[in-house]
Image (cartoon, rainbow, N blue to C red):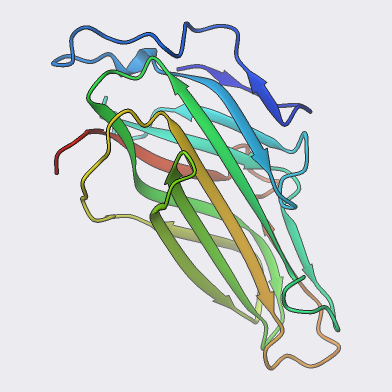
Length: 219
């Protein structure tokens, strides 16, 4: 699996690793190790140009039909200051990842989420953290929302697994990952200041989407 660091371009196609149109002739023994990132796009206030890094990584279970999409966000920081309207106290980032050399009859599906970061949340402040996985701009395929309530000062961790098994569509090699963070002052005093950061300066990989290769067109 290929990796690359996105330095400044919002969209960059890889010139190595083969063609996105190439396929495998033997779907009974697919070689998932030949799958690579062909291109990515990303946009949103949470991921300005040059602030996002992505890689395909093996998971600890060493199952050949699982892999991780590891994402590092260097500037996803949401401040909350007194008097800021709720609709402005938030940021989002949409990452579109395209894969090449995907074996026929197989589609990557989201199996689990492992996200983390740092936060300073005063008492009365609520943070809504929403992550969504889609196929190529379609309807949400997997979606999870959690709420962090203050007071909290330090690291945070958001993990979800055991997504329900569902019908998996075929020929889906474009994957969308969206993170949306909203802060609400709620019952916090007017002088309250809080902040929420997706990512951590202490770790190289901060957000992991755990994927598995599902046989498409079947449950």
